[in-house]
Length: 507
Image 1: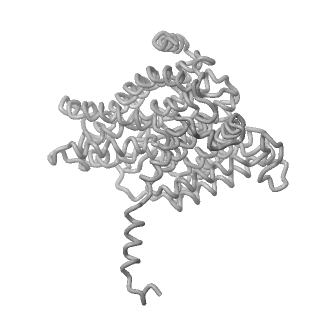
Image 2: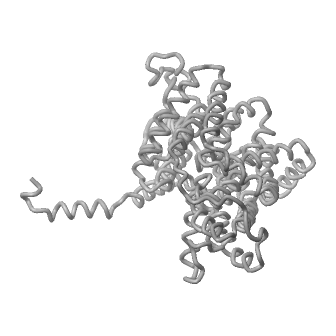
Image 3: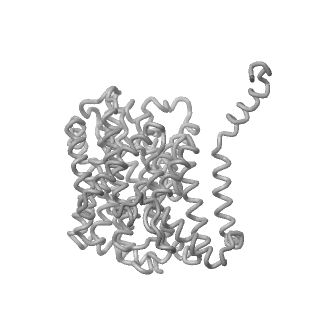
């Protein structure tokens, strides 16, 4: 696999194809709008575009989806800076310094600085993706079913422990997703499972239907309760282009944030939110007291924005080379690839070289178009935030229901999506991440299939199956991640306080 020549060939194909360029530009614009609208985000937007994906070939729809994903990370910063409400979870840390900067009369400058930081993160992470994807894909070809089973287990545990602050809730969400994936006919025996006697569930739960329900409908239900009490910046003010001092202050934080973001994107479950969190935390530790972190510091704005955009390209590494989604959005992308009959993982670039490298090249073109669109149209994009949610929510809900119905022309899918929308809303209320449910649902079938194949090759002996070195390594990482995530201090503290409690009180 000649990485450089394949990449240059893909970039040449994109730049000489007006249709592809237009599709990528459309994806960036749609993603930016989806990102700046609180409660929408990339996962919902990609899920709602299903009817479009079903009418065009993957050579067009997949570049559209990845450009939309990257565009959403560009857009999320706009509402974070102007309204102090992150458009998507990856922009949460952007509010800490972006909004204070806007309140100081530097809203225009904050938007341009964050757009440049997003561009830096996207470009640096693209280089990492371009030169790691090939070797990692070839390495994955050596994986057998047992190793793949262990990789999926590791991905599920890392996802559950890295997303959110409550690992047990994360594990519960993953287990629910895996359990839902078992609905339908069991592949080996041909017997129905958990269908409750209905024919409509024999084929199982379509992941796309569940995704539209959880992200599209669930987000709308949650956004109706979203408070808009924060102090909003009504217009763009101040100098638009950053000064040389601001560029100098943001260079090293941007590079550090890009590296952290790419690594976080590669890790299953980390994603843009964790990338921005760690990047901001590092800058806060490195910054002197005079930097004014949390009060409108440039480095506090640049670091998380570079990180969350870099995490997008990083998340493509496990998705394309191992078939493992690292976030809710890449889980949606995996469902799209499977819908087209494509199987991302080891050998994907060998079997689909042109498509694979076109997806990678689309990220590069998206980064360039993203910074151009976001800098040139910031004032126009900011006006979209003035649309009241009572007008926006019904439109998104209608699109979600139409998308569900169009999959199989079945009203049952609409009912299932509504049920998943309620489930997603309840999960948000109790502190569970709906993205973890989607990851469990998408990976559940892969987990079961590889487990059955591995047990078949080992003669049904589970211990023989897991005795391989790579299997033990990945399972050990999963166990270590689980042990380090459990609240040992709280459990020990409760036990100690119970031991010191007087006997009559314990009674």
